[in-house]
Image (cartoon, rainbow, N blue to C red; front, side, top):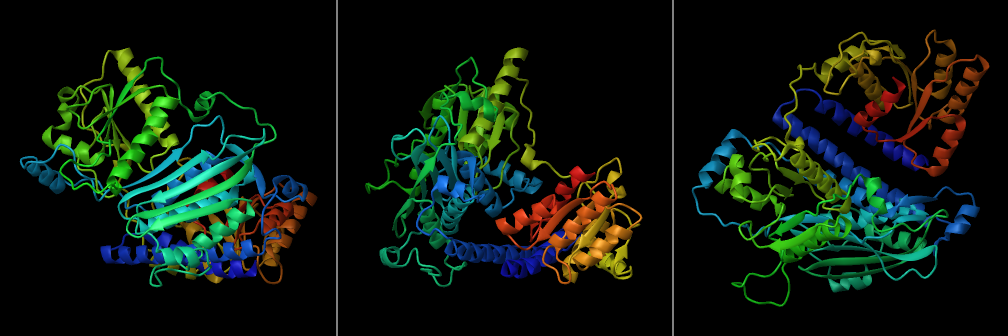
Length: 608
């Protein structure tokens, strides 16, 4: 616990300071340096997480396997009911969002260049050899609700997918989830998780001798500490499963994980489409015909036959399979394939962004619906290029990773448009509009610099500071002014973390006091003439720790009939045991450092 706290607390100071700096005007070079600080800090955080996870796994009392029923009997809180399909897709979205480059709005110059290129001969469909697609393919099941250790599953998916993203620049990364065998018992089945990529691959020698060894790296100069696959192997063993791995240099890697999973005690088998209502999907009475443009994956006849599909062909076939599974099996739509828009037919065209942009180069957006017989377009967003055109009204952009939930959400938008069209007798002429992820942020007043804020802060008393300055920064502030009425107590023995949180409260316009240990915090609560709306409590402190201080604060509130303050533990200790102890002491929320200030702002809102 002490190790976790000592490692995470300095990172909180680094990352939170960088976050504050982003909200003030900076020159381009300065902003680049802030981004480098953030990136380096996040890389260090990831390394620390791997090291701490590795230590936790090695300290597990059961190192060979885990039995759900016996684990429950022991009183541990590791086991819970959760939706495995949602967990897998959620992890994929988080990892992909964290690694992708923001998609800028095309400038006037770039649009002019694109317009000029329209006079040059361009192919109808691009080859997309440099494209990378992240795909989540989940087998349709009556339910993926299982009873297991969600944290272990999450780390397994994160490490395997993170490895694939690290070593794959083009082609395909696919995460698939299926049942390996038919269900033999009413409450147990074997889950098959597979992560496939077309990355650089692993040598056979390293695969046989070192791939699961801790701190082993085939490329000693690569980032990381070599614990990712070792942690996966230990977690799979812990869950009573098996792991198989095969790889080939310059071809790619495939990891297969087989883990037995139990159904929840109240599990009732559902019909195939019963779960669609729970994710907001309605099956439309009309059968829509969907045409997948350019996803046949067949090699070009002009290519030299090799007997092996290219990475781009594998990518297209995987997208085709994932889209067809949702559109045809889940939604009952009719799905066909076509090599080009000219050869396609139906109500909906699903097309990759590069090919859609090529079409718009030949035909302006205002005439798209007139030039082609498709009513709607689903445009699969590129992971490597920026949008060349604003999307027309009848086109919907679907971002990566492509998974069942995201495809169903896109299908729902199409059905809503289809319903609207049926009611109004057709779509109005589609005018170019910017999609949601291309919206230009509203202008905002120039805030003062962080240097000025820190200077003002240093001139205030070290323990009690009341903000009278202006509200600054880009974070949203409630228009009713309630945030200015909040009174905060910040408790932390680290002066840097204390100053960062104090600066943030000044930024929000809150009044606040500070305390360097739990005893001072208790005295503040007992002697303050004004109730604290929120107490940010560190747990590992000298003289009196946060647990004892919280317990005594709760007792004081009870003895004097006071309205309880909301207490958030802000600690570097990422431990289930410590979290349970904090909740028992009276903490309302348990937050682990390093903490995003934007996340803290969002969590503060229920207090208002």
